[in-house]
Image 1 (cartoon, rainbow, N blue to C red):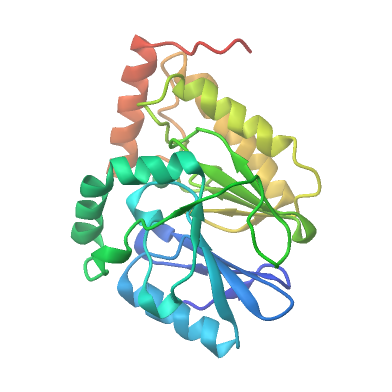
Image 2: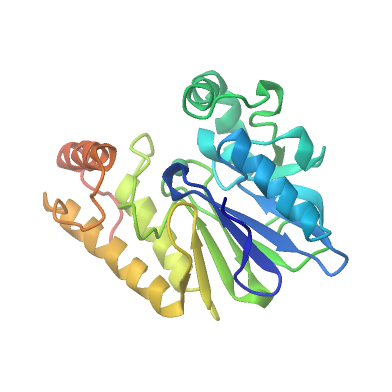
Length: 261
Ligand SMILES: [Zn+2]
């Protein structure tokens, strides 16, 4: 049983065995908390809820970093609270609901389908709550409406499904400029000051040096992908990642990046 671990005083992370998925809990001074990307199995969420209660915390909001099924989950036991996402992600989650709900039911059965992807669009570039300031860094790398979160006072960057030590950059091949959009998002992360901890949506929590290594590794992968390479990236350890890499290679061969670097 994995428990919530403290990354900083006010940022806690739990890691699921399913695809090493992380869930982040940001704690406010009054012991309320925000839950980012709860997942993945119902058992995971039960453990998460027990941990949250055990620490005397009360969930007042949720956040979905992007509209992929494993980031759209929720449970009654987490409470009936707003679950924020970028407006673009809310729309994409609604458009793709049937397919992603089917994936959730296949791969993590037992969730209440009524709660799946029930999101509230953000009206600003910060999470609207009374806890530590959380800047929303919206872009469209990996998925339309994808958002990274920067818990500024804690120096923590939650990268969603980017900057992972176990996954190559996974591009949104349905987007207008998958490689260019990915590079742009990496620049947004680089431009953030005072980041001491990185929490990828799948993978290991790291320090500032780890973030720099991940940014470098992701840029190197994109550089190589664009000239038909990238196949020796050490993160290509699973069949599904190799398949996604092959699809990305085929895509960039057909449609080179438009963005001028
Ligand atoms: Zn994803």
